[in-house]
Amino acid sequence: MNSPTRDLLDMRLMRGVFNAAPESFELLNDCKVIDVEGHTHIFIDRGGQTLSVAHLDFVNDLTHFHEVDINGRDVVMSSRCDDRLGVYIILYLLPRLGIHSDVLLTLDEEHGKSTAKDFKPAKDYNWIYEFDRRGSGAVTYMYESKIWLDAIKKHFKIHAGSASDISKMEDLGISAMNVGTGYYDEHSHMSFFDIVEMCGQVDRFVNFYNENCDIKFPHTKKPPYVYTPPVKTLVPVSKVMQTTCSICKTDVPYYRSHDTFDNDYICRDCITTYHARKCAECTKYFMDAEGSLICEWCSQLSEEFLDIGEYMGLIGPTECKICDGDLDVNPSQFFMGICFVCENLVEECPEPTCGIWKRKGTICLCQTEVIDANDAAATNRDVQ
Image 1 (tube, rainbow, N blue to C red):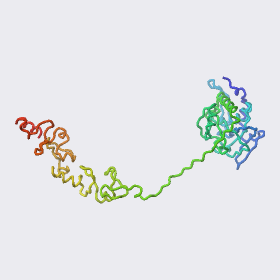
Image 2 (cartoon, helix red, strand yellow):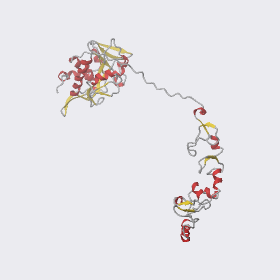
Image 3 (tube, helix red, strand yellow):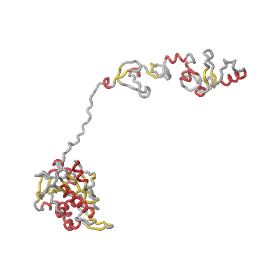
Image 4 (cartoon, rainbow, N blue to C red):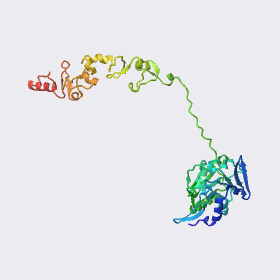
């Protein structure tokens, strides 16, 4: 498909725009050179309702300009595509297409200090645009009002961008966009732009302009983000986290030993002075000064069944009263005197005066009237 813009391109004029020195643009007809503390920008009033922007500075001083065909793709090789292509479009190409916007030419954009920030317009514009973007589509930066984005989406795909001249013009309260120009590898000596892609972008912009040139798109500047560090208020610890000690039952500030006391709250005095410890049998906390594993109550209870030394597993291995095997160091096994294996195979006789352990599902020896002597002897031999 042939673009109406393609026939209007003047490649000789474009070469002159690409290679001209920045100060030579001060000789343009009807232009005003405005200096603000040593930083200049150029303004041309064409009586337009919209404002076009481009920057004159570039990254390197290479002056090559070659129109070449690469695999059927017409491109122009130049290290100054950014943004002398935009300068050519707003100064010469758009007027040939019937678009006469006011022009703002800036400096120092490539250093992040665009002189666009110094521009003070004498009139209100409907919107602002520039051609300083790689590829196709458009970017809007901080200009994101719904009506503005909806208008752009009809003609361009909106991309994300970092910054350009229009990023410094938010104080004007006017919506703006940056249109892609089909250039690539900007800021390098291999920079180039695709002629067909550039003309397609200009054609889309012409349609956008004709549809929206008389519509004003205001912009409301958002307040800058200011980091506010959190305010730390010093509050007494006792008021921040007050709890009750599980040992002495006094209200104390929160303190916990995660190695020994799980999620229970123990005061510092009970931990350091009285050697608070959790009983291995009943899991209650008790005061321990002798290195015991169980509390005094559980110790007294265990003496009714086994010698306390064997119960604690400190004297030597305790044998299972069923299989004569060693018991594991587990308080519940010491109480019964039966290992884990036998515990699942035997049960105590339900007769209160008997106390004999028997295999589950068998008849105890105390019930001799039920089984004969040979079976009783065999049962006793198996169990004991």
